[in-house]
Amino acid sequence: MPIIKNEIRIDAPIEVCFDLARDVEIHTKTVGETNERAIKGVTSGHLKLGDKVTWEAVHFGVKQQLTAKIVEMEEPYIFVDEMVMGVFHSFRHTHKFIEDNGHTIMIDIFEYKSPLGVLGKIADMLFLEAYMTKFISSRCDELKKIAERMGNTR
Image (cartoon, rainbow, N blue to C red; front, side, top):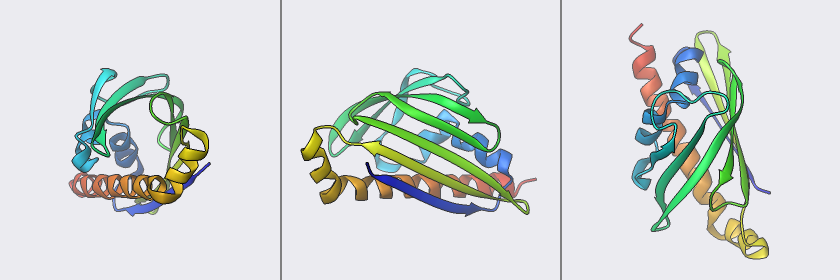
């Protein structure tokens, strides 16, 4: 099972970073060219423990839907979402936030299992793990830009 870890230092308070990371509208602004949007469940505002959201996006030229549920939350330090329906066999996405002298270390840990058994493992090696790594890293970079703009207005 691939595990993707991304760590980024953000010049903004932990509360700002935590809230932005679970904000549905901000999420759609940080995912680039996938045209991702919330279509069912919580479609605006901040995700909370127990919330479900169905995202629709285009990956590899194919429109896909994926439903995730917030299964763990300790504000403003961690929240975890897990796939309940979608193209992966399974995934667990842990979002951690560590306060560091007025700055925030944001850590994403994305653990997933591809569908299709051996074919999925081959897809991981050939392109999927690299694609997901870039997707998560890019989203974190965009979230950092937004958080630092907001955090510096205090």
